[in-house]
Image 1: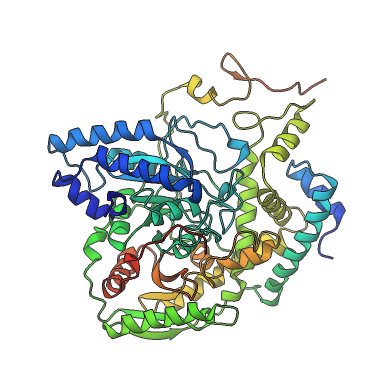
Image 2: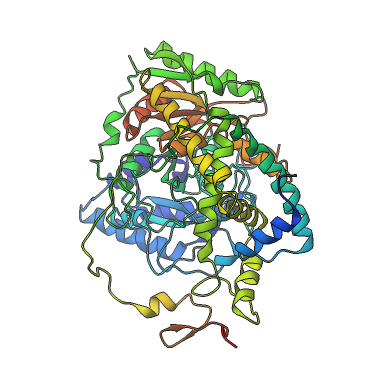
Length: 488
Length: 95
């Protein structure tokens, strides 16, 4: 087996026992990228020289027995919306095509402090707006399980890189499903933590009341290990929460006995691919067989979530993206006066989906429409959150499909924005309510595309999610399957 | 129609986005379709519902008003499209 196929915890063991050096592992990762990324196109920017320097540094620490963290010497990829000091950060947008951040995101700083090796920056839908990674201003990323299919989005590059062994693990961001849906599409594990659990400082803002950073990994243990490193309050993110960070790996007992699984009846309706329902039902039965208890629950406002989300998220985005004005950083067009400088810089710099969302958000916030759209959406958002509060009186986690279908074909939904938005139907409610949720593999459809199982937890109860996910993973073999990187 | 072409033009100006005539037509059609879907929110009576403010209990995060970062104008100006000494340079604003 190649080193690049190792999980984070397996690679960590080999590094600590000196069976493998970080330089060897890092070189293997870049070799793998060189062999495969012309097909996958997961990376926008590679950081090979700096990565090898970090690897050499890690190897010196191993030599001196200064083993500071489980991430020491491990090559990790970052979605290209994490600010990385001195390393180009584009957010897959032409408006930031040459942007070199003057500082690191807090989460990046934590990875550096833990001794991780940064392999590079991965592709995404421009400004994290999309569900297929096709909205990148540069190029689309392909799904390693079938190169004709999308990898999901917006963290499509990170998910594809993990699935194709082009890194050991990765970080992404999730505003409406952007970690979980690509994880499901690419057959990897992805976790969106509770809003406030992980610092957002230095993450390029999309919708600030929902954006959250999380891991994309080859298995559940890796996910817990990465979360332990990145979680915690940050003095420079006032929405990060002062709560003790548990040892998430201690939740990985393999025992799910007595855990109450809520199954929302509104999530199993028409429009969902039958094989997805079948795989999720089988997964629930597997957990039940191992001692979990199933409760049917109701989340009655589910059908309103997409409408609420695409008002709130676009409103916040229209405000956040006002900073791209061509004045202090980013693309500036040559124009005769200031207004034209703004208008033309933004026209040239933003892609179609970003413009569409800025327009929708500006409209929803504009005089005369604010009450009917933005305020109404925030009221319905309260109802959606209350649904979860009620449901969690009767269960410990909620189990659902991650997405209504497996990965679709490139180009299939690009002409119909609303259809694209509906791919997020099972993931966005948790962002609206600020809840943590994880996706892990639970089977394949008849065309060999991975299916994701979503586990939603109570606020700050990532531990129970990880416990259930690990219990399921131990009982199944899905996470051991590998993609062939071929057309089908 | 939920949204007219004139409204699209007005919103584009508010958002400081230059649109081509084709973009205007396409956005009018697409936004109309999307806003039509948003109509379903009107089905719900929310007269006694508070608008959502924050996912988890949070109070204002206060801190002392002191400078904690070091001034580094060159690093911050390194991405400027145009600069003059430690200033951002912009096109003429006043004739």
